[in-house]
Length: 259
Image (cartoon, rainbow, N blue to C red; front, side, top):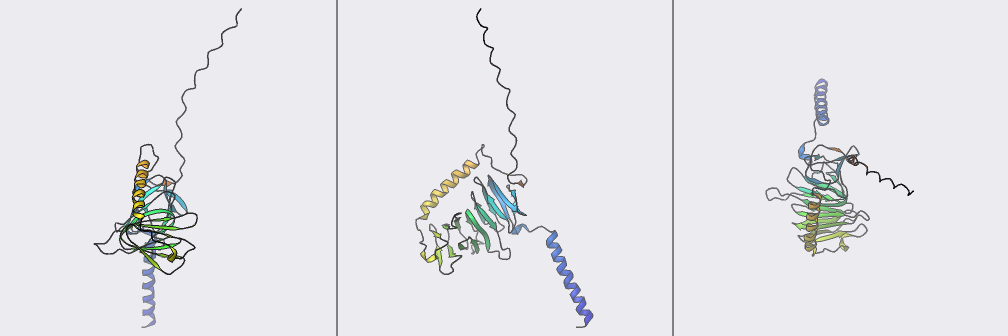
């Protein structure tokens, strides 16, 4: 290959790379990479450039964004393959922290989520949920993940399907959970010391009733939840209170003293 041919090839290659980089900066991220809000109540925000922005139904959360819920916050998200995840109050999660690995769906830092992984035509749909103490692998199932704020203990409860769990800090044994089973993963204990609880199905039914009551309460007319519209900064200044009514009439003057 002559020198001028090599130079021409290099110019074409660099031009192609520059075009791709410019396109990545100009074009928005594909909706296939996003999670869409399909239901929401209360205080739910996403961090954008380290600033919390209030989410509303129809908004999309992009990869690497942090989702935060307040004490009354609840939101249900859907991704492009039909899978969904619900985020409950006082939670902090990262959506697709590693975009280069589409198996990693969520990093649950604290709080509770409920996840439903949709199967593709009956075929397994491999996904992973990460917490500070656990790596949870699923292929098509419905399950809960809770992370304690004090000691980072992870609780995994399976409602449907099969889930594989291993310790994030102490590699070794993998435990398989079936429907109705749960497990606690402690930060300072190997997974081998964690016992699979086979009576979790009853508690899951009770938890479902509590979830239904919570959702009904947050959707009541008197609740200050969010149900749609444009985005805005979380923690906006509340609407001013209505002006007070007229002051009460002055009391009648005392009677004159007797003569």
